[in-house]
Length: 281
Picture 1 (cartoon, rainbow, N blue to C red):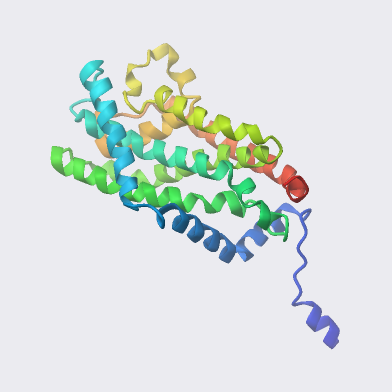
Picture 2 (tube, helix red, strand yellow):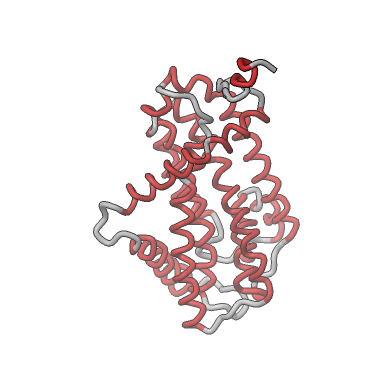
């Protein structure tokens, strides 16, 4: 092998139209950029705030209080088994807040990083994926509140708690799918970004966050499970409340299929449109 041939083996050619397998290898090669963008988002989120990470405590806690008063005290909706209503609500707020944070932050991330995207090529999917770190930090902070509620009410979880990481992953995928899809769509249709907060706001009330999914009539359970967060929330409650909150497995499988289908569709749509990002932005 000549010197020229040996030297050429060290060159990496990057282009937007590479095969899918090479694309995912490029994402791994650019993992340092992922961490840089993620750290920047974390710094921007909390650096210039008065109380910093305390916001991650305040928002879910106040939402739990409002839902407990409105649904539990005023509407007198039933809890699940003997579980305290506040614990039932907060065990649903955990995955919902994770989902909503990913969707809100990632959907506009490509447009927000237009200067970077228009100057150099790298796998564009790194941009929306990097925003997941901020949502995860808020999630783990909220876990502290849940631990406090469990200690306060003495509603200790059973053996099901070991499966909680699986449902955390499920909540992540449920948020990443529509977030990646929206991130690609918003580049071309900018007004679509104003729809995302509306969707998350409505979704908070139509998902079983402030109430148990068991109050949904049996004949509507399968249709209701098309909402992917139904299966995720039921899974979280099963892990935390145990036997007081059994999983409706047919509906759970439907939610899982919707999550996987949306993720595959979102990745396909994003990969198809990202080649024109630099030109449009």
